[in-house]
Amino acid sequence: MNAIEFEDSANAGAQERLAATADTFSRARQALTSVIFGQDDVIEQTLITLLSGGHGLLIGVPGLAKTKLVETLGIVLGLDAKRVQFTPDLMPADITGSEVMEESISGERAFRFIRGPVFTQLLMADEINRASPRTQSALLQAMQEKHVTVAGARHDLPRLFHVLATQNPLEQEGTYPLPEAQLDRFLLQIDVGYPDLEAERRMLLATTIGVEQPPVRVCGPDDLIAAQTLVRRIPVGEKVVDAILSLVRSARPLTGPGADAPGSVKAGISEMIAWGPGPRASQALMLAVRARALLDGRFAPSTDDVVALAQPVLRHRMALNFSARAEGQTTAGVIARLCHDLF
Image (cartoon, rainbow, N blue to C red; front, side):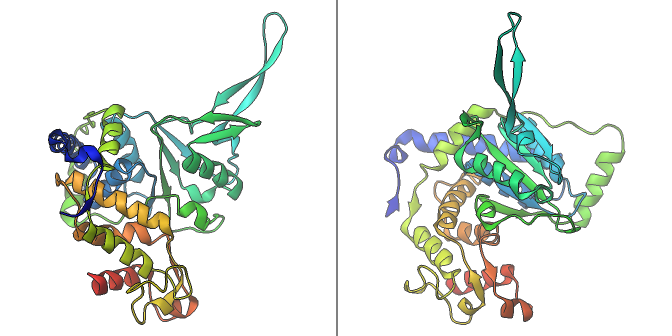
């Protein structure tokens, strides 16, 4: 099979490590579904985000267990987790930390850096769009650069650092929409919907009768780091690489970069797109399809993985123009049409 692969992916022990890692995170997924009901796709996409080493944006109305999901993730994966409630008066120093003046017994004064909540392995940024752009930009640097700068001094974040931000699509008064540059830093946009009838019935009984079963730890930070390394070594066939490139490049307008590539734009779709995804979307999709294959215990991703992850990877990285929106077109509908036409 023609594939892009790293040297030790051909090692005889690579498949054994992949199978063991897949078993570990399959048990982690089961532990999460035993606490979070009716959100199997959300749980899968969140685990894909972490296995890919990225950040996730959870969007849903209140009461859909977004906060509980992140708290449970921290317990199941054995990660140090912290939560910050974003509000309009939240300052950058409330996230990154600040320097304070201290005086020793001898009378000497010196500044000491007190770390903020961003120094953690799993940070929940609750209702991120309620903070000011200045505060959002402080988090942006941490997400992209894996360090913060305070008073001209650099402070590195932990090796494992993931942001799972939540956003309420309702009550937009007094909010600050995330800029495109920050949206692009999120590997996946995970839409959280309502559970189905049977899942809501199970949730109702489990949470109102007796004592809820607490989540259990399945693995630790070292296991997640090893899994992230393994994800990057999973071979990807040329057919899947071509599918990723075709999809991402087809989601760009005719006047955008890559519009002249063969088969990059389907007739009738390019005219709807105001701006489309950049190369970071291709990178995100490449990692995400590998992580999804790992979760399913497969040794290589397929084009089905590309189709399954097209929506969460692309929907926050592109926008439709005014005429398309006036006709009732949606970003999700355009992505679905692209997948149908291409695959």
